[in-house]
Image (cartoon, rainbow, N blue to C red; front, side, top):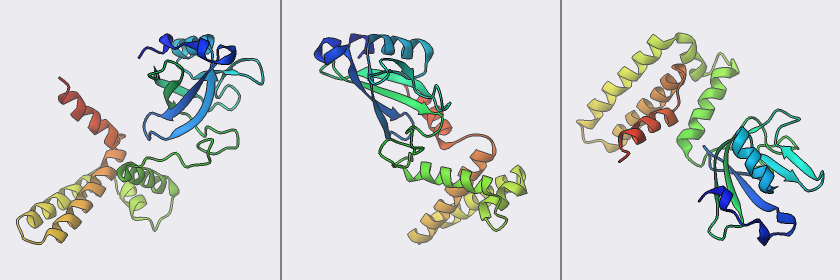
Length: 201
């Protein structure tokens, strides 16, 4: 529902709660409060803005730290008195420095997305002993070759009657594909977006 349809009269001082959720991981990041002006400012600037009850003024999250919340979507609930804000955080959300205001790590419940984060961390880690780091050093051609090798091994196991080996080779193939995706500047989310686009009515 259109966020502008929210009924501010249900709350004191015409300020409503706004639950902020990471658009990618779906983690709840924080709870803020918005009045009509904050909603309009958020929609017009694309950066999540609240009404600060303690400062008695509009407050754009990240205006001091630079850790803005980039708006992706906003909706009002079924009772027209609470907002759900989906955003992309540019850094830690809590003023204490944690990812969320509940001191939780902002990571997806989807293990594949968590695995992508691990790959990214090891790519940047500089640990010469890390297999992932060595793959990135080897270059695109080597990584593409590894994907090809794992694909062949997966096909071979698919023709046999050893399900555990087939799953092991499938996992190796998927892992090396995720590495190659990152080397090309993409994530699994980009691939999912292409598939979703193909299946839209």
